[in-house]
Length: 114
Image (cartoon, rainbow, N blue to C red; front, top):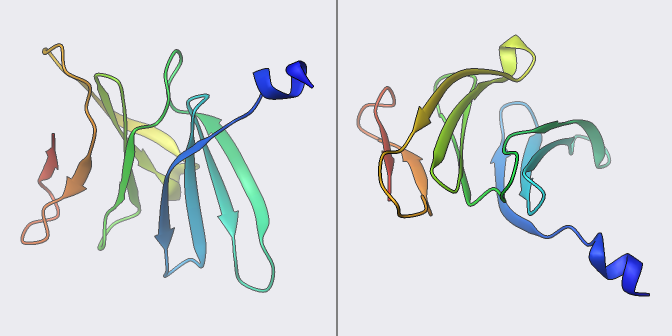
């Protein structure tokens, strides 16, 4: 029983990519999981987004093929049209954990975080 508890993975953030009929789930082990929900839920892929910490937040760009993720002090931009490649990494120069990320609804080229 203890071994099962030690490997328990907790979902910290879920976002829907409605145009693709996908959702992404960021977990406590720093992994982003991509699922298709068209007819039934099917895992498409998983990839490591953070090495030593959990995914604190994610955001989906409404006009481009981007998902933004945050984990501890890092913010990363993932492009699903490039096989979920990390196209940009923003390392924060402060001591606070990034708890939330978003794309600016007035200009989706601008990201916001806190």
